[in-house]
Image (cartoon, rainbow, N blue to C red; front, side, top):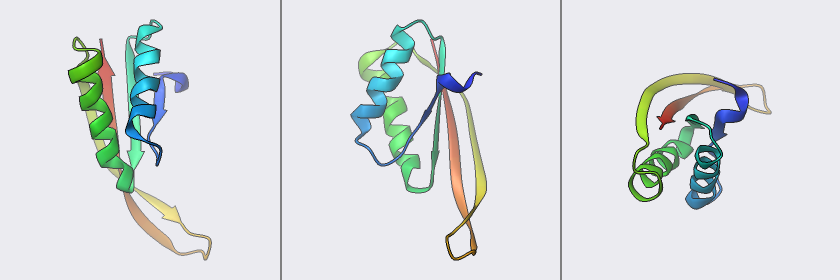
Length: 90
């Protein structure tokens, strides 16, 4: 999967990410990967569900991967952050 087919979920409103996914899929991309970490995980799940239920009803869930990433803070301490990858395909 190429890097332009990846939507990184952050702190923006959910509909911003839904629009990004729908735009990519309507532009001819057959699959899009949603990636999120920490508190944005629930937002990524919301994006996937809104795209599937309201906008592109033929979209299917592909592979869903979960992991833990180590993030180092400004002070130099490390903390573990949960991460998720959700694959949507037409």
